[in-house]
Image (cartoon, rainbow, N blue to C red; front, side, top):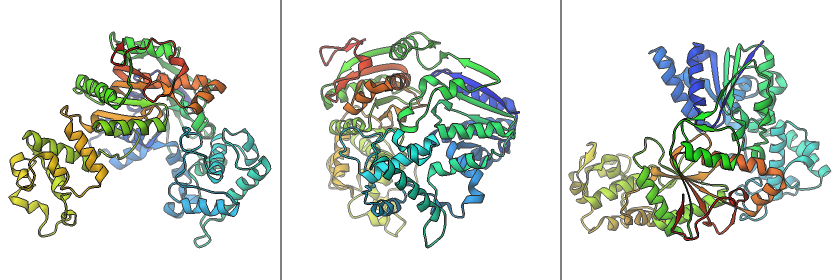
Length: 556
C-alpha cells in the first residue's frame, strides 16, 4: 500500500525547503524518484535544487538522471506512454500554437472560424473583441479534458458554446476522430497535451519510481487528480509526498483546479508550516485582510503602502524609487503584478514611454533580454566612461548599421574593428568609442545600429534616464505568472476588467481573494498597492483600504 504524506505550507513558510529535506532523507538515487511540479520554470528551479542535494551525497552523480527526475505532470505522463503511443513526438503532438493549420482545417470543415492569434476566452480582458467560434470549440474541448468529462457535458463548461449543445457535441466527437485518424500522409495518431494524461489514466500506468513528490498540489485539474489517484492506487510506489496550500489555489477558472483536492485527500501523515520566513509582519497583516487565514510571520517590520499613479511619469517615479531602495537585495528587486494580461500590456506601454527597461514574468525572452540589455549596458558605459563588458561591445559592433552580415566570423568581422580585442573580459570605453568616430554622444550611436525603429526608441528612452535601472530589476506580469516567486518589493495593482468583476460577483469571489493573497505574499520587504492607474474599477476587496487623496501621497 502506498503511503501518502501531506506537507501544507503557507506562502514563504519553507515548503519547498522541507520537500528538499525529505528528498535527502529518502536517500534514494535520482533514478528512483520523481519530483512533479506545476510549470516548466518550476521544473528548472527544482533541477538545480536536486543537483545540489545529490552532488553533496555523490560527487559522481548522473546529471542527466537528476534532471530527468524533475517533471511536470504532463511530461511524466508523456514518459509513461511514449513508447506505446508515439513514433515521432514532433509529428504527433499538436497545439493551436504549434500546428494552427490543423485547427484551421478542422474548423473550416464545420463552418467555423479559427484565428491562431485570438485570445483564450477564459483570459480575455474585454479588449480583444469577439473570440471566434472555432477557438471557442477547441477551448471547450480543453476544459472537458481538464475535467475528465465526455463531449455531451459541454453545456457545463465556462465558455460560450460555438453552436447549440447537440451540434457542439457532434463537433467535439468529430475532433477526437480527426486526431485518431492523424495526418493521412503519415498515418500517425495525433495528441494534444491533455490527451496523454488521459491515456495514462485510462491505461492505469504508474511511474517507474519508488517515491513521488508532487508540489503545488492545489493546482491539479480533475484530470491530473485522477492520474494521482491512479498512481496512488497502483501499489507500485512506496510513498507519495503531496505539498501545497489550498489558500493559493488560483487556477479554478483556467484549469478547473479545486482546493479541496489538497485539503480532503486521505493521507497517512501530515506536516503543517504556518509561519512565513519570507513575509514580515506588516505584509502578513495585509495579506490576512485580503484573505482570512491562520498566517503568521517569523519577522517583524516590513512596509505596506497605498498609492495612486495617474500617469506613466508617476509610475516611473514610483518604480525608480522602489528599485533604488531595494536594488541591493539578493534576488528579485521589484515585481509589478496585475490581474489581467491586458493590464500587463498597458504597463509595458507606460514603462516604454517612461524609459524604464524591464522584463516579463513567465516569458523565456522579452525585449530587454540578451541583445537589447547588452546594448543598453554598453551605451551606458560609453556615456559614463566606465569599462564595458566584451559581450556589450560585441552587441554594439554586431548591430552597427551595415555590419549584420559580419556577425559570424567573416574575415572583416567586428572583432578586428579599430584594433579592439574583444577577447578581453572588459574593454575601456575610450577604445570602443574608436569604432564610432562620427558619434558625439552615446545616444548618437543608437541611430547607427541596425535595429528596428521602435527598439531604437526604447534604447533612447532608457539611456535618457540617469538612474541606471537594470532590466532585470523590474519584472512585470500577471499574479498567475508570479506564482511560486518572490521579490523584495511588489507593486500590486488593485483594479480589474469588467469581465473579471462580473465573475467576482457571480460566484468566483473566493478565488479572487486567494489570487490577490498570492500577489501580496510575493513581497519579502515592501508591498505597494496601486489604485487608479488603469482608469478601471477598484477591485471590491480593496474598497475597505484607506487610499491617498493626493496622487503623490502614499498611505502607509
